[in-house]
Length: 174
Image (cartoon, rainbow, N blue to C red; front, side, top):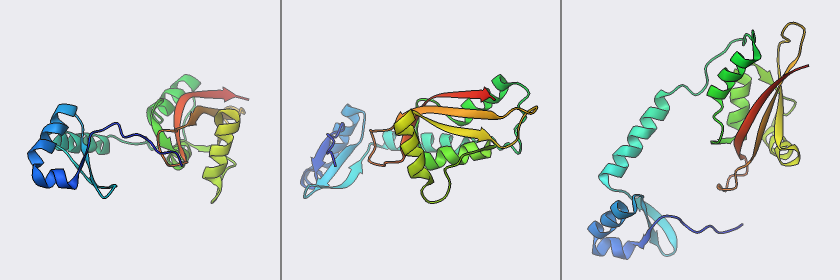
């Protein structure tokens, strides 16, 4: 496992005991949290009140936003309209777990051959091999099968193996 350099300020528990206000000032100046270490392990994180309240507000805003528009059976009158719905549910450039991607695609009416316990591993393997994950719409539209290609790459900024970054989404009729 590759160790990563922290891009945030750090301090020791001893320094926090000596002067907590210095650590809060360090967080304020850096504009980010300060990791507090105790015997070479992270004991906690210190934030200013403003940083904490901003995080709470962002969390509240994210929870208030619908993750996936519930679509019983998506009507694909035009692929452009359906692609727009998909792009709202799957934000390009953002990190997402393979499991979450699969749940969102299923909610939009798609299926994949990668199911069961090994499904996430199969999805990541397909992504590594081909650069995309393939889905098929459950119902044919006007006798045509609709496939979705989710183009992306594995997210190397996290230690979780199942995180990926969606770059593009394509719909195709067959």
